[in-house]
Length: 404
Image (cartoon, rainbow, N blue to C red; front, side, top):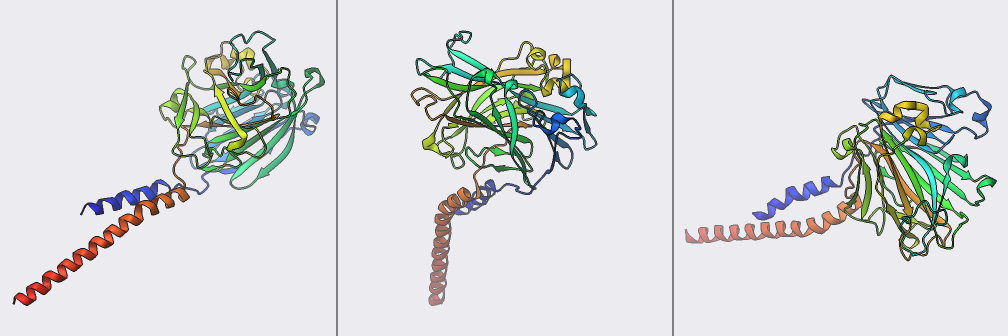
C-alpha cells in the first residue's frame, strides 16, 4: 500500500529535528594570563583567553579589549602554547603574542569604529559622501575605556560582559556594552536573536545605550575588519540566506553571512561572520521593539598593517598581515521610516566562527508538532486500512466456509 511509504518519511522527519546536544568541547579560561604588570589589575588591560578542547584539536578564543575590541579564533593541535610578552603587548608591539606551534587556521574580527551619520533623506543607508564631516562621524574604538561588568563560567559556555565609556575629548555620553560568549556545543543563546551557534564560534552582542547624537537625524553603525590566514588575493562572499522558520527570532526569516573562500566551499578550515539582520531598540527584545540592519560589501583592505597597528592581530602577526586575507565592511542599524535613534538604544548580535556556519534545523518542539500533524492522519489511514483489510478477509473466509 502507498501509505506505508509515508512511514520512512515520517521517521526521517523526526530525525531531522534531532541534534547532538552533548558538549563536544571542554571550556576553561584565564583573564590576562600570567600578567604581573599593574595595568593588568586596573582594567587598563583586558585580554581573555578561552581554551576549548575538542577530541582532535583545540580552539583558542582570544578576546582583547586593551586596544580596539578584537576576537581571534585560532585552531591548533592539543600541545600548542600561547605566550604573551606583556611588557611589549601593552604597547601593541609585533610578535608580543606567540602561538607555538603555529595554528592550523586563524580567523579574527576587529570592531574598528563606531559610525554615526546624518540620514537627512531617511533612507537608512550610509550617505555616499562619507568624507563630508557634516554627514558622518566615526569614533575610534581604541579611545574607549573598558571594564568587565559580568562573567559567567560553566560547562556549557564562558560569558563575559564589558562596558565602555568615552573620554571627555570625544564629548559623547552613553555606554557601549559588549558581551562575548564561547560555547561547548550547538545551541541557541538567550536573549534574542538566538543565533544557532556551534562549539566553533564566539558570539558578540553589542549594545549602544543612550549615546548622545550629533545630528538631528542620527543613525549608528559599526565598521568591522576581518582577517584570516587565507590567500591574500582571495575574496570573501557576502550572502543572505533564508531560514526554515522564525521560531528562534520571531519575524526574522533570514541570516547574513560573510564567508571566506573555504567556508563557501564548506571546508572544515574556513571562517565566517553570521548575523540575523535585526536590531533591537529596547532592552525588552521582541519584534515590536526592533528594526533592521543593513550590510554592505566587504572589499579587501588596502593597508592592513596601518589599519591594525597596535591591535591584537598586529601583536600576533606583525608584518605578516600584509600576506593575509584582510577585508573591511560596515553594518548600520535602522532602515527608512523607522524613527532613527529615537529610543536611544540599539542591540545587534553576530557570530565569529570557523568552518562552515551551522544550518538551522527544526527544533524538537516544532518537529513534534509537525510530526503529530502529519503522523496522526497517516496512522488513522493505516489503522483504517488494516481494519478494512481484516474485515474483507473475514468475509472471504465466511463465504468460503458457507460454500463448502
